[in-house]
Length: 113
Image 1 (cartoon, helix red, strand yellow):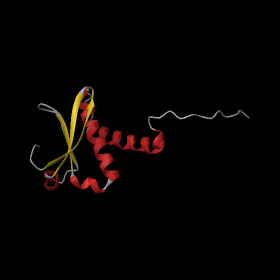
Image 2: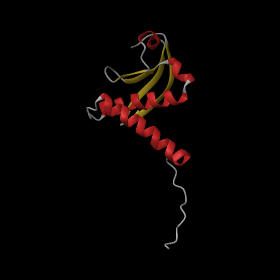
Image 3: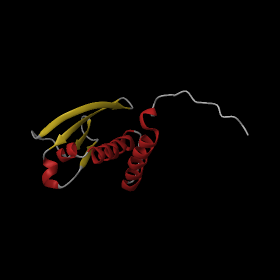
Image 4: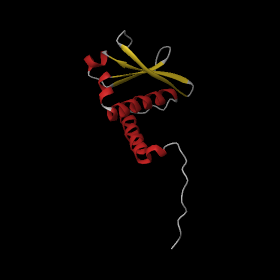
């Protein structure tokens, strides 16, 4: 899915592989929210531009496509349902931990009664 209708979003590395993320106008016509390409010379994710107006769906779709990349990079052979469950669970974990995700906060000792 390479075309002139792409808008670069950002890049990240997983397992030493650079993944470029784009918004792809062609997805409007195909009705897809996202697409992962892990063949050829590099890995990339294309996202529906309408996701810019829906942060929750954007986050879930991006994580979904990132888990497809993880599956390909590490030869996990995850099924579509596995990827979907992982993306939703990751959102739930992040929401549950809030800004504490990745930050070790001081804990309070509780007294035994």
